Amino acid sequence: MAVNSATKKKSSERSDAPIPKLFKNPKVAAAFALFCIDAILVAFIIAYVPYTKIDWDAYMSQVSGFLGGERDYNNLKGDTGPLVYPAGFLYVYSAIEYITGGEVYPAQILFGILYMINLGIVLFIYVKTNLVPWWALSLLCLSKRIHSIFVLRLFNDCVAMTLLHAAVASFLFQNWHLGLIIFSGAVSIKMNILLYAPSLLLLMLKAMDISGVITALAGAALVQILLGLPFLVAHPIAYLSRAFNLGRVFIHFWSVNFKFIPEPVFVSKEFAISLLILHLVLLTAFAHYRWCKHEGGLLNFLRSRVVSMKLAIFFPTSTRSSSKILKEEHIVTTMFASNFVGIICARSLHYQFYSWYFYSMPYLLWRTHFSTLQRLILFIGVELCWNVYPSNIYSSALLLFLHLVILWGLWRAIPEYPYLEGKLSTKKDK
Image 1 (tube, rainbow, N blue to C red):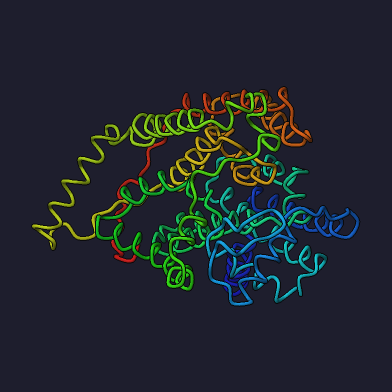
Image 2: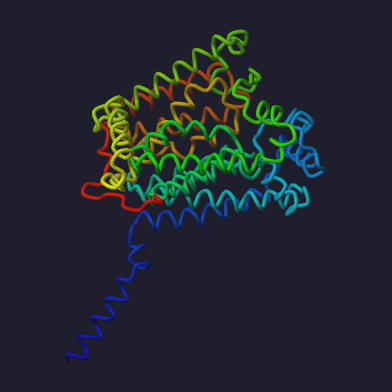
C-alpha cells in the first residue's frame, strides 16, 4: 500500500510538472492555438496573395550603395528618395539581401517568420500581464492591414517593432540594461520607437538608482555610436541630418489620420509645432496624474530621485541597490500609453505606421472602463479606418475621433499601483 501511495504521489507530481501546468492556463492554450492558426494563414497569404511593390526596390538600392562602399548618406538613394533611416536599417537589410539575393519571394518567407516571432513575443507580453481575457487574444491575429504590412510590403517598421516588443519583454523581467540595448537597436532601424522613450525613462527612474539609469543609457548610446561609426567617421553631418531628421514633411495624400486637414495647414510649421506642444502637454499630464500618481505626482517623484542621487553621492554604501521592482502591468501600460499619445499627435500616419500601435490596441482597450462591446466596436472601427484606401476626410476624421475616445478611456482609468510590495531590486545589473 505504501509503495502504491508513493507511486501515485510521484505520478501526481509528474502530471503537475511546469509544462502541463502551463497549458492548463486557458490564455497559454489560446495563445498557442492562435500562433499555430496564424502561421497557417501567413503561409497561405505568401503563397496565394500577390505581393505589392512599394519600398522593397528602394531598400535594395540603398543597400547596394552601402555594400558598394558608399558612406555618405546624401548619396544613398532609392526609388522613393534619399535614405532617411539610421544605420541599423542598412545592416539588417544587407543581411536580408544576402540571405534572399534581393528576391521578393524568399524575403516574404523571411518576413513571415519575423511576423511569427513578433506575434509570439506579443502573445507572451499579453499572457504575462494577464489583463486581456483569453478570447480577446484573437484580436491580435485579425488585422488584414498588419498581415499585409509584414508579408506583402516587407517594411522596416516590422523589424523595428519586433525589436521593440522584445525590449518590452525584457523589461517585464526587470532586465533594463539588456532591454535598453534592444530598444536602441530598434531605434537604429526606425525612429518612431522614440515615441516610447519618455515613458521608458520614467520607468527606469522608478526601477533603478541613478547610476543604473546612467549606465543603461550609456549602453544604448554606445549601440548608436557603434552602428553609425562608419558614417560618423566619413560624413557625420550628412548621417546625423538624414538619419535623425525630426522635421520631415510627409505628403498630404498619404496621410491616414489628418486627411481632413487642408493641405496648406497640414504642411505648415504652425501645425507641426501645435501638435508637438499638444504631445508634450499630454505626456506631462499622463505622467503627473496617472503614471506617477502613487508617488505624489511627477514633480514629487523627480524631487525624490534628485534626493536619492544626492544621498548616493555622499553616502554611496548606505543607498546601494534600494530600487523597487515594477509591476508588469504598470510597465506595459505606461509604455503603450506613451506611444499611443505620440500616435495621436503624429502629423502624418502612413499605412505601414499602423504596425506602430496595433499590437497595443487590445491591451489599451482593456485598460479602459469601457464595456466589452464598446471595446470591440472601437477596435473594429480603427481597423476599418486603416483599411480605407485611399484615406479620405471621413475615414481620417473617424480615426482621430476613435483615438480620442480611447485616450479619454485611458485617462479615466484608475492608475494601478506600480510596485511589487515588499520586493526590492538587489541586482546591480538590473
